[in-house]
Image (tube, rainbow, N blue to C red):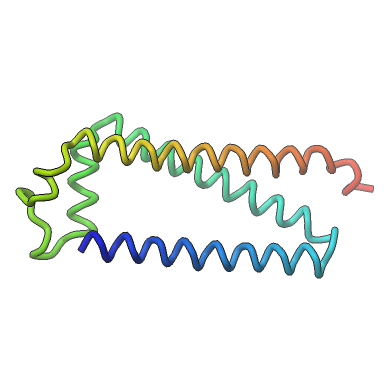
Length: 132
């Protein structure tokens, strides 16, 4: 069950990456400069949305990681294969899952800050030229 969910996640991530790269490449090379500001705004908006999501998850984690972890599993593994006393919970401690979630959240936050900073900086840097 978990293995299938992780594989699905990788396929969705790979498909999304391929689509975004192809869309950006076609837009940047075909439309040239007139599309760059739109793309920068889209990247900046996506970065802000990611940061807001990470902030919400961070607040949920600080208020109670156990409850958030339990609700996540009730939502995504609500069949007979998910057991609260399963071997996965015996093999991996709560600290492992906390550290894994923290790693994913910090990685996503870092990438969102980089992409948002680059696109926001480019928008500010080219602001006067776009108005002319």
